[in-house]
Image (tube, rainbow, N blue to C red; front, side, top):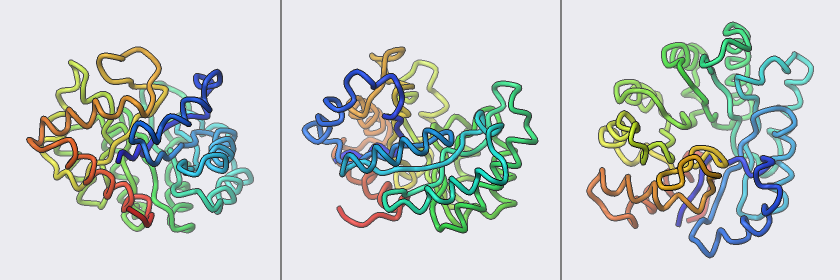
Length: 257
């Protein structure tokens, strides 16, 4: 069984065939999906999607690129959505220094605030971090993110950084990048850290694995990621599925098998 720990099925890229695609998941061994919010509005649509499909769960939060929309009043809306019965995490939150806006200090402020919110509501966090490894780690450490735990999604840093996040109690999110020609660093991370700290993800509709790179991604492509991990670890695909499934259940504090 495969657990997609990070997807965006509320995205407009799925507007034409969302229901038929999601209805096909069980037949393809995709048994659970966490759909992840990235803004106030997408956090709402994520909860609606989770209400519609039994195997979909929600994460709510504001992506660093969207933090300009936040203020002391509307952050309370994320807190309220965090109490949704199918909300399993606060995210995605973090830092993104690839672009110059929003300004870094604003991103840092709301990253810290959303970690504290996660601790308050007793939910793990989903961390988005791009070109901001040290600041991400420093804020997580300062805010005691280990209290809530979570995952560093779409991991793009060195194996040395991965070890630090794992030591803090975090999982490493691995998706299509592991199949890319320029995905060497992620393959080194997967080789280095124990499989017990890795979870599968798509970030769909983005980051489709080879040979679908550049096309719309979906959870149906996750077996390609499983195969790559199995090859690196020298184990069966069945073992990768089994262990990453259990990891995802631990990450999101879910029961069941």
